[in-house]
Length: 495
Image (cartoon, rainbow, N blue to C red; front, side):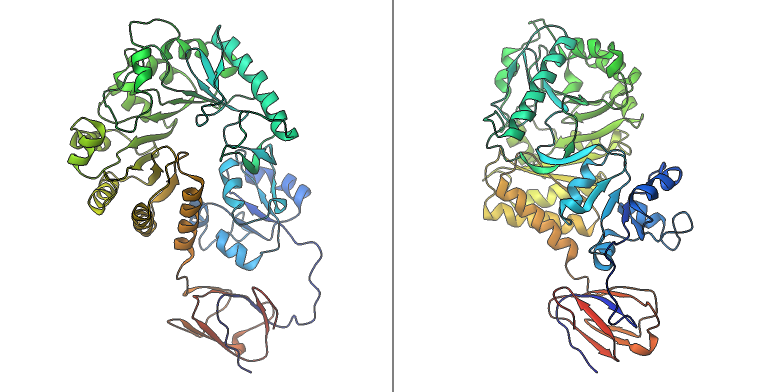
């Protein structure tokens, strides 16, 4: 008997024709964290014994050719979706926000569960309930919306208490459909978010403090007027004073707190060294948005601690001429030199490209930018537009080129919060398309494959034994020839 099948051939099993499918399927466990071995007994009592483990690419690669705990196969998520598409997936990570967001692109939310992370499925965003954009005389529960700036005053502790009351009510209003400041925001969507609102773990310092300065004048910058308003001569709750007070609150001096410094260029701040002295003594994790024009020894010292969440630098160009046109300063060579000089191995460097029509939307700059990415060994690119302005067709082609080159070189593609909703979706689809395209020869089997020849795969049924499994991901115009009487399960019907 011979079958020719176009598309994706998901499973082949022998000697199981007529058997009923089990009503309860064993779970898949996601994540091989250090605490998992000691927690396995509890996990199994909650969800049952896992059929297989999966996780990040690094975790899967670590267990290539061997079993986790000498008992469980570790396979990629793509393989899980091919072999066990109906099984629920349980996440073992204690912090699983990013993992849950990723899995929601592949699974229905009802099939995703958590052992450790206290997350629930609801309408919210990645900021609300745990994030404060902290400013000199106001705060915001996010760093995107301009409608939610709330006037405040008092000590740091008093301002945080004010923030907590506000975000708890805001979350309740969203849940109950009461009109609120978040209405219409593209970031407000259904997803997995922390169950508890008002538990502060991320403090962002925006450009709104006395002493905040920057040595560049980027053409797209929308906070230049704030630099003028809060000159160094005006005293008050500077970034340094706020961080100093925060460091003296025992409940916030812990490694679960992340500080983001995106208020101007930290390395030209008047209190730069004093701020780094506090950061070095604290337990906090820190995210830096910096233009990399200045080399600072204490910044370099902090980067060596391993407590840097990431470092974000907007290059927005690939040539010195365009860099000067955008930044108003001719120093691209110095920036690249500092990117190489700083100890960024543990810092999760991200280089950003903000597309600006008629300025940097050309192959020369995009190609030059990518050469710098490779030259400084950056592993993540962030793509953005100028404050949610839609990408032009020309820009989209350049984005596609960046995605294609980055995925070829194993560089991660990230999206800025300042992309339009349509461009956000476009990049998601582009990344997914590129990651799944042309997997014709991706064949996984418990047994030997007789012949794999280009796009044509031939399996001999004589090689199939009880419970043998084959997973073959094929292109649109490929075919499979099968000689023998076997059971076939395709993606849309059984034959």
